[in-house]
Image (cartoon, rainbow, N blue to C red; front, side):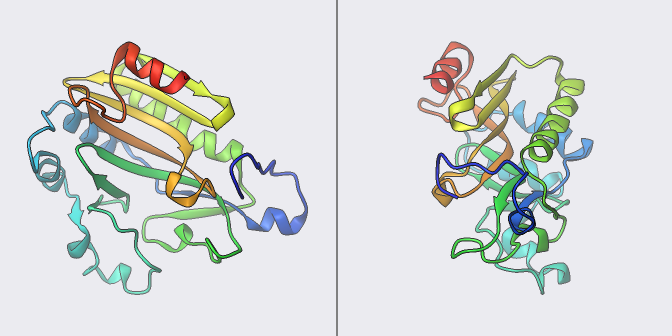
Length: 215
């Protein structure tokens, strides 16, 4: 599905069978752990990796020694895996996808990739409503912990949403958006923790964030 195309969830039976929403649930424990990470100065080398390791995140190599991954399909090239199976990325920030909206078939995703991964489940025939509901449940979880978000910004043209909280020296973001590596073949929802002090960071705080995601 290329950029600009959409799936309504009301097509033929064959189309419905190809539609998927995958989820690795975000429970209070990893959510609160990421809030704690957001209170740290993440600009130091290895700070995020060490802190997440203390919360039970494993390196990719360590996680792959788990028998649960022996029959799993190709594992994403991530930096860490959460105790629940979230593939987590570190690059001056922390990014933890927890849901994907996609279709199976074709060269890019010939099989139900995420549904076969440990800790994940996929919902055949699910689409936008289910994907939005998963993200909204995490927004509620963070709202219970942090209070109302500072920004809840939507970009309908790009099917993107950014819900943000300023936490310590960082911004914590729950975002839904096209996954760029896939040439917009699917979308993902993720939690991101990014330092506000990093020039050119993915999610600068305050007015700069609003300008970034509304232009």
